[in-house]
Each structure stands twice: as C-alpha cells, then as structure tokens.
Image (tube, rainbow, N blue to C red; front, top):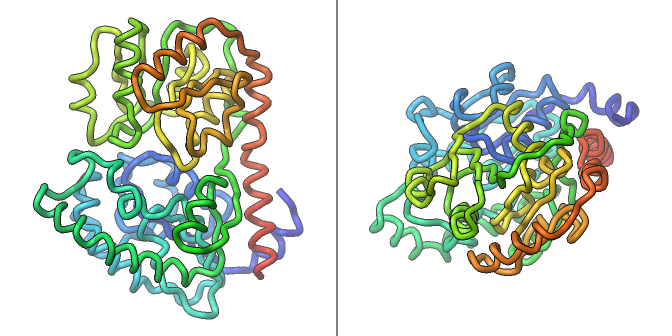
Length: 371
C-alpha cells in the first residue's frame, strides 16, 4: 500500500454504502475489501442477513435502512426494492468527507451533501432494467402480473436510472466490459479498477481430481444449467458450490454425476478450486471473480466467450472459451480441453495481477487525486 496516499486520507471521515448484504457474491466481496481498506468507515446498506453473506461483516459497523428487519431472505429483499430506493435517496450522509457507494442497483442513488466527495464503484448498470431477459420467473420477486407491469414501465425506470446516474461525477467500475456499457447507456466515462483477491491465500495442488467445478450463485443469468447438461451429456462429474433462488429447479436437472454442495466455507471452496479438473464458467458476467480465484489456484477455466472473462482468462494458456451459450458448444470445448495441457504456474501468474495490493493502491491513488 502506498503510504503517502493513506496518510493524506487518514483524517478524512469516510462512509461506504452498499446495496444489500444478503448474499455472498462478487460485489459483496468488493464492499468487504473497501471496508478492510477503511476500517473506521461505517457500511450503510438496505438489509443485512449475517448468516447469508460473508461472516467478516459481523465485525463491521453495519447500518441498515428502516424496516430492514422485515427481510428474512433474498427474495423478500428484492420484493421491497421500492422501499430501498426511497431509503437510499433520503439516507443522511452529513458529516462525511468521502462516501464510496458500491452499487449494482440502488446504492448509487444516494444524495450526499455537495461538500462530500461521492465515488461510485458501479459493478454494472442496473441489470434488471437493462438486461431483463436474463432473469427467469424464479429469479424475480413478483408474480407474473406484477412483472408484466414492471416490464411495461421499463422505459420510465430506465430514464430515471439514466438521470440519477448522470449526477455521479466520480465513477469506478470493475472491467472494461462494464466501462463500455456505462458509456453506451449513460454517456459517462468510468475508470477501471479490477476487483481483487488475496492472492497469497490460494495455492495449487499437484494432485487433482476428475470433477469439473461450478462455483457461484444459482440464479438464471449464471446459466448453471449449461454446466449440468454438458456434464450429463459427456458423463463427467460436476461439483456445484453455491446456493440461490433456482437451486431446486437445477437439482431436478442434475443426475448421479452432479453433486450440489450448497454454500461452502472459504477453505472448502479453495480446496475445490485447487483439486478440480477445471472451472466451468458459463455466464455472461460483467466481471466475474470466480475465474480469477480458480486461476490463483492453478486451475484452468472453461468460460463463455463474452463479458469479463475476456479480461481475466488467456485463451489456450489459462483456459479456453466456448462461443455460444449452448450445451453443444460447451461440450465441444470440454472435449477440446481434455486434449490440452496447462501449466499451473502460468495460470497462477495471470491471477497475480488481481492481487489486493494492486486494488488498494489504485483506490487510494484515485481518492487522493480527488481530495
């Protein structure tokens, strides 16, 4: 960490605002890293479910919006989106010199005082507004009639999103992929600072198993179904680490060769990474930290050729791509992969550029320039 940058900020009163702490996902990891970088900063969020998100938040100063106690699970949280929109819009942030919002959707709608520097780390444009077809009925909180009304109102919601986002002067984002989306949708420039991993916490094993691995949330746009169907077709073992709204549906797709682990501990996940044959990454992700973690463990990635994976996976060196989100395309890639050899040291070397030290220095340098 650059000492000069830290010293220039240590007397600043800083707050962190994050959408919600109700799942274990990549944006929550970024919020946690920001909190570790600024340990005295409170974390303002809509709802907080300690047993559903990363346990490290239990030691943090987490402040929730009114009525957060109503939320018992992810679906209930999504059901109350209008409430959180109003809550963030009226959140009292007086007295803070710097406010860092970590936003997928609503946290960016804060209105800090004009004297406060607001930096938004925008993980993606509000996904449901701009990519509604990526969600199945199970991944949204309302019934079919209500969702039909929401879709009818999308043009209005998009205009509100554009107007509110354009008020943000200082934008960071997680990939060039998302930076391009931000410029296309909002007409704004965002500086790319990649999400980090603690590189030294990962290691590779000389002995690997025969299973393929999927790790992440079990919701529609992650396309876990592709991994399941491809492994069933090729009769390959698949381990699925993660939970989500579509777990029951996906379990019905699985056969004897598919094992659902549910949520696993960080230690268990690292073991799964280091011993898998390869990670399967079938989604069109804005960034996607899971392929980076797998590569830090010396394991190759079979990824859909789109989105953030194009910035984290080196084709034919640290993994391979499949060109279509279709079972046949993934099967072809897996067969091709099994005829190839990969160097774990080369794979790990690629992941090192995402180390937490790089992230911390980039964040501190950016804030120093603003202050």
